[in-house]
Each structure stands twice: as C-alpha cells, then as structure tokens.
Picture 1: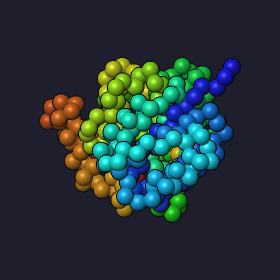
Picture 2: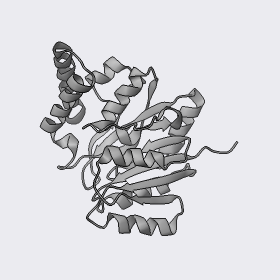
Picture 3: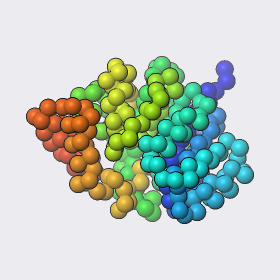
Length: 250
C-alpha cells in the first residue's frame, strides 16, 4: 500500500538563523513522502534566499512569499490552502523534529484511525541545549482539560485534512490554542503520543518567554472567545498559570 502524503507547513518571518535547521529536520525524516510548504510572512532578512536554495536541491520544498507581514495565523491558513497531503503538520521555523517524528506519528494515526494527534517534546535554547527534558503529554485531552492547560505544542501536531475547515486558524493571539479548543467543541477526539519527537525552542523573544503578554492573551480567550463566566475564567486561569510554572520550571 502506498504511503500517504504529509504536508509540512512552516510559517517563516525573519527566520534566517534557524530556518535551515528546521527544514533539515524534515528532509532527514525516515518517512519521506512529504511536501514542505514554507510561507514567508514578509521577512526582511535572508530567509527567502535560504529557502530558495533548498528548492533547488529538493522539489518537495515549496516557497510562497506573501510580500507583507500578515501574521502567523494567516501564513498557516495560506499553507493549508496550498497543501496536497492527507495529513497536515505544523513546524515553527525555529523548532526541530526528531528524524522518526513522521514515521511514528503517521503509524499512530493510521493504526488507531485518529484525526488529530500531538506528541511529547523537549524544550531547547537558542544553541540547541536542552532546557527541559520531556514535556509529557496526556493520552487524550478534553475541552475542559485544555482550558486548564494547553498541552498541545503546535510543532508536534498532525491533523487530518478532513477536519481542517477554511480559516482553521483565527486572527487571535495564541491562534493555535484557539484552534485546538474549537476542535474539541466540535467533538473531535484529540490524542497524545507520549514520545519525545520534537525540540521546541524557547528564546528571549519567544511568546513562552513573555509570561505576562501570554497570560493576557489566555484571559482574552476565556472571556471573549470561549465566553466563559468570570468565575470560570478565574478558575481555569489559576490552573493554567500553575501548570505552566510546573511545566517550564520544575
């Protein structure tokens, strides 16, 4: 039986320092039936020229230049619209995949007939040193559980194209978190693969490093997008902050 095509969507904005490593981590996968969709979101550095070099070497690498900066939500949606795979994966331009990421995850998805899965991961710094080893993920998540903690790192996700509706990522801060919550509200089952297959990079410019800004965005999601009551928002926010501290510092 032929192997299904996986579309790897990489949004890029001023990513010249890391984009080559991200692409290399896909090209060296043990599962080789993929396409790489790089969507450049108005970079002002050498990101485009770097990706163009990869295009010359491997026809599976495709580059779309948006010319202007529209935001990561738009870049991911654009990448989805240009993808031909049966499954979509999202790789942030500064993150890295283990070489067997696609092989393990596609097998996990197909054997269990899952439409959405995510994996455990390590946290690394700007020099690839491990800051936190194995952020463990649950076997599955519920809507109520995800409100208390976003256990789904975007670069670990694999999703069937059958559930990626138009405009899957909305124009909101923490757009990936909003998307996962929307899937769970549609009663789509979300499953975790407890194996480290991704290195998530945390730098001083990462959203994860700016805890105050991230917290404001989470509160906005509770109140203005999910329409939770004040008391529900406070309850979930306390859990979110506490679990975030445990995840990143202990």
